[in-house]
Image (cartoon, rainbow over all chains, first blue to last red; front, side):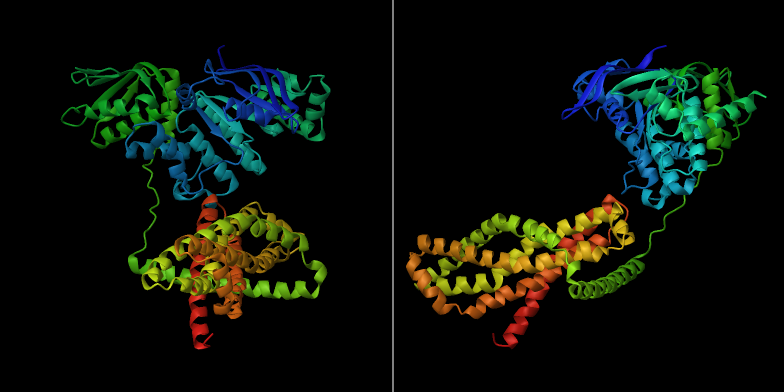
Length: 262
Length: 374
């Protein structure tokens, strides 16, 4: 399989503290990779570096085979057109309606006429599971779950090959969060996306991801599917997954998959 | 047979062959090709779309094809999709489900002219009532805090004085000095014609001490401090910091609003004195160079022609201006709702309204003072 993202020997320092020390990570085409780790383990920083928002001290990040850290603005733009990002706080433009938010990338990056842009944006809004009358509303008028969906609609509007999701289910109620997991899976299979999810949500990790990278001590401690990762003997990983919450999520998932088996 | 890269249409067989990549990048081209196809007449029967050679299709491509299909079918021709590879076929069926019904977007109604005027008037009136309520509440809070002096936040007041008074000294100095220079220059030109050079002292003293000092300082502070108050409080409100205070049993008025108002109340008169001094100094420098009035002459004449009353009237306006700036700044800040946009709008309003009411108040003062013959 071809790696879509290749992070190698990444070192990041804020002041005198090392965030990442010689970190290596690969994301393959078509997979859903989860990134987890305790608070302060550098998940968000890693994500920001992959998005070219923060510069590491040294190392290399290749996306679609292109080096990100030395990329010219043109190359960067070409890469940016091929990915979509859903931020933790949605980052919807508050002065634009949902429809305008979703059409924004189309207006900026395509030469389509207004009608096509509107049609495509509405399609993505519906695909993200929003009712159509939400399109004319402003982000402030929507509930948290609907804002997430609007953010997702904007992230997928350019039909990206790669999707970054930062804590997609944080702050959602369990039903909405589960619905969002389904939505992510659904989009992934429809659009053939490669997805990188930074999350704390154990249910999401079990349900959505193919592999999970566990960050700790400034590096990737382990990259494995969940079923293997939970049995890893590293104390950090054990502490993360074998707490009371971790067990419940695991049992729930195994119950579910055995139900499906029958 | 018309062939155009990604599409090829054979009118004989009524067969449209699609090939290549059908994605967002090529959508404008694809769209123009599709809609250029002349449909068979009479418009009935079937038309076949062969997708065997499609290499890549994304949701935009699928949307386009389905959109076209719907338009063609409306004219009475049935469109059949054949030989599509697995992935595009799945995509097509999925997208088809999403756009089954033509989606009517709820219209946002634009109110007519008269309604707009009415709405604006009502909004203005509401805002005025809200402002009065705000002032009333603050007054009650102030009375409560004054009766329990341990509730007075001396540290916050000191911080307001430092940030909005002390740190404003350089800019107020510069501005007042230059205003002094400009006024002297303009008036000096006229006085010189009549050989009445020495009267510049009277004119300069009166205008700076009574009007320019207080006004320039107040306007500068409105831009500098009023806007800061609104933006700070607005962001605090968005972050729910104000809600947090209220649930902790500390009123936001006590901790955030009153110290700002009290601080500015103290510091604006002081800044005005500062501005008066340098306005006059600016004028003095200009009189010396342009009108040949020595420092000694200037300073000797100044106290004989400018009564203390003038200075006190000027300084007396400053606390009122301070109340206008800080109450409007705080009021607009607490009115911020939801978004970054709102912070921007309210900050602008805060500055514009402050300056507007400063000038209105100044005009009212002039009328009152002239009636009182001061």
